Amino acid sequence: MAIDKIAIIGCGTMGLGIAESAATHGVQVIAIESTPEKQEAAEQRLARSLERKLRRGRLDLAARDALLARIRFTHHLESLREVTLAIESGAEDLTVKLEVLAKIERHLPATAILATNTSSLKLSELARGLARPERFVGLHFFTPVSAMKLVEVAGTAETEVEVRQRATDFCLQLGKTPVQIQDSAGFVVNRLLIPYILHAIETLEQGVATADAIDVAMKLGAGHPMGPLALADLIGLDVVLAMAKTMHTELRDSRFRAPSLLRRLVLAGHLGRKTERGIYDYTNAEDPLVNPAIDLVAITATGT
Image 1 (tube, rainbow, N blue to C red):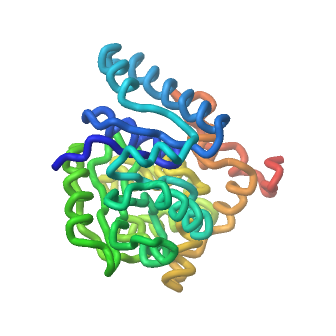
Image 2: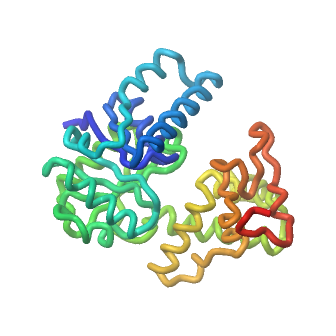
Image 3: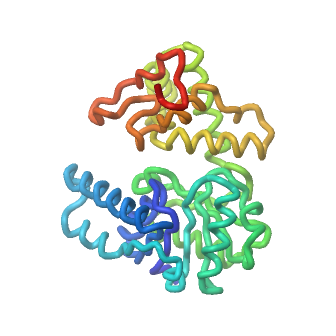
């Protein structure tokens, strides 16, 4: 049976992407933020995103209006009583997620599925504070959600077979390709991807090549659609750093040790596309240039 109404808790880049993808495929979405101010900001970000798609011809007015009609924004968790699937998409922090997941569960119907979009944390750790861990599953979408087909689907030893199957079917409902993954920090993609990105940043830091040269080399030499540094900016350097820290702690593997350049950029608030500066400077979005701060000897936490 198709899932026709879901909730997304946490309306950052990933959360809004999932909401938009679900609404595009006819699913009613309740998009939940923690405060009225954050709710309003999320609504504005979605409106701007859809406006860009209109200008580029990727969406027409009728499709935009239909999509918006399927998404309802709120900051009240009581709305969770209406849904059969809730997807948590908040900060990649164990303590924060444990608290948020427990709050979500308290408002969900007992038969509903609770999912997390975690990219690096172990599900068994996240499930430890839940009253119904058998209804808990991991659904790891990828950014940009509208374009990326993959969803990693994982459960714990306690996750019911029916829950995992319904979660898998939901991904198919959205036109995605679900792959079944064992519960492990980083699952498959980030376990392989994050060391690659970290090594690219380290290569830049060591002066082996410029950012442009590194990205072009991997696109043309390895057939990648996007270079690792541009990809890091798209994901968000803060997100890359958070995943690196989590997997370094979980896996005790030096491949996940974050380069100092990554740490300095994050401390300076240069987080990538979402702040218009990361490895690259996106102030002129049509023609991104390498962030001038990369060339400075000292990039401080104040960004000076």
